[in-house]
Image 1 (cartoon, helix red, strand yellow):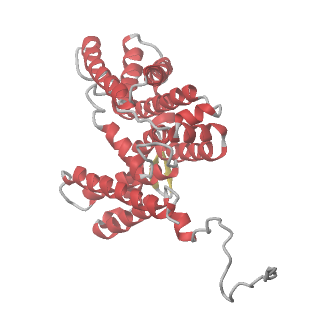
Image 2 (cartoon, helix red, strand yellow):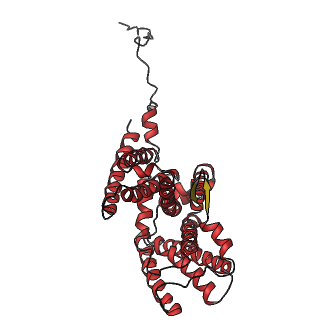
Image 3 (spheres, one colour):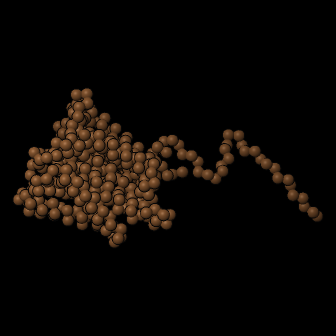
Length: 356
C-alpha cells in the first residue's frame, strides 16, 4: 500500500504572540542606560550633593561650591589620563609622586640657574613625558605587570624627590620663585582665578572640563580611542587585527605624565614653593576616582565622563565634611566606603546590563 504524505499546512501564529527569529531581543531602555559606565556614578554624585546640601548648609553658597569644584578639578585633571590608562588595561602607582617630581624640576631648575620660569616649565614637561615613556617601554619590553613597574618608579621618584631637593636647596622644600621672570604669565595659565557672578573660580575648573570633553571625543570618535578599548580588552587579539599595541600602551603612560606635569605646574604656581615629600597616596585617590567613575581594573571598559563625576564626589565629600563641621578624620573612611560601594554597584550594573 502506497502512503501519501499530507500537504504541509502553515499554521498562523497565535494572536498576541510574536515569532522569535533567534536574535537577542532589544533590552529595555533602563538596562541600556545602566550599561553606560558613567550612569551609576552620576546618580551617586547627585545623591552625595543632595545629602550635603541638607547636612551642610554652607555648601549652598556659591563660593563654597566654587571651592568644591576647585578641589574636584585638582583630582579630576589627573583622574582623566589615569582612567584612559585603566581602560587600556594598566594603571600607574607613580602618578602621585610624579606630580611633585614635575613641580620640583621646574622650581629648582628655574631658581638655582636663575632662568626664566618657562624654561623650567618646558624641561619639567619633558621629564614628565620621559617618566611616562619609561614606564610604558619597560612594561612592554619585559611583560611585567604595571603594578610592579610603576611601584618601582614610585619608590625611585619618592627617594629622588627628597634626596635631590635636600642636596640642591639644603631643605625639604624649594625656594620661593614668585619674583622670577615669567612667573606672572605662567601663573595666569596654571593657577589664575576669574569671577563669575561675583564668585571666584579657579582656572583649573575650566581646564578640567576642557580635558574631559577632549578625552570623551578621543574615546568615542577617534581611531586612537578604539585602540585604547581594544588593547584593554585583549591585547593579543588587538595586535592580530593591526592595533599598534606598543604605541598605545606607551602613549597612555605618557598621557599620565602630561597630567602629572599640568597638576604639578598648578601646585607650583599656586603656592610658589613645593614640599618634596608630598604626593604619596595621591595615586590611590586618582585610581579610586576612575574606579568610582566606572573604569574596571581589568581594562576594556569605562569612559572619560565617569571619572569627572568620581572626582566631583571626592571634592564634595572632602569639603562637605568640613562645611558640616564633622571630624575630617572620617574623610578617608568615607572614601573607602564610597570605593567599595562603587565597585559593587559597577559589578551589579555589568551583570544586569549583560543579562538577556
